[in-house]
Image (tube, rainbow, N blue to C red; front, top):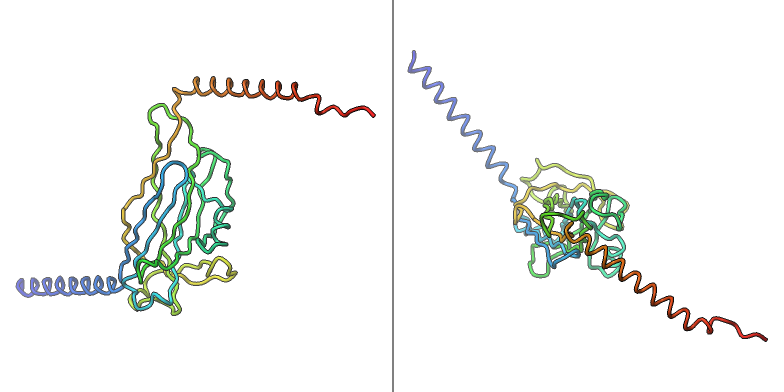
Length: 248
């Protein structure tokens, strides 16, 4: 009797393991993509480069579109006027979901969300790429470091193809409603696909002022302002006769 009970338990365990393995294989039938990100340039004006390799969907790349939903922290901002100019030159397609205060410092600003429509990468037949200019905001002066570091969150990767799903094994992934394009007033059902980010975390460093330099900066600023004001007054006094109209 005990032997029969053990056999039943072992049989149940093997069946459970079989279904777990089968479920894992089914879920892995949808290819996992790789997204590479990097920051170009230094200082307050950078370029965010995002590349997506759609090798798993290689046969359907030509009829698919890719959208990066990127959260921008308060330490950064996208310039809507610059984005409009790039769009006119067919260099970038970005939708900002909220108004942007270009003059606000980091401690008074709020984060924003951008919808970045990627373009086919000419260097890779089944890849998409986006290059978006980003700008750092001014931070409070620091007493310990010349730089302020923060992490740029990984974007949400959305894919829209001419069919309901770009791959038969991806039916379990959620569908997100988003604008079909920058100029389109309609929304489409984009597939929210998982991916492997490279690197896992994208760190940025922004130069900040030092509190120890505040007396020097204030003194120099006041001195330069006074000198420039004095020079303007002298120039106005010397040429004041040119402003007087001759009497008739």
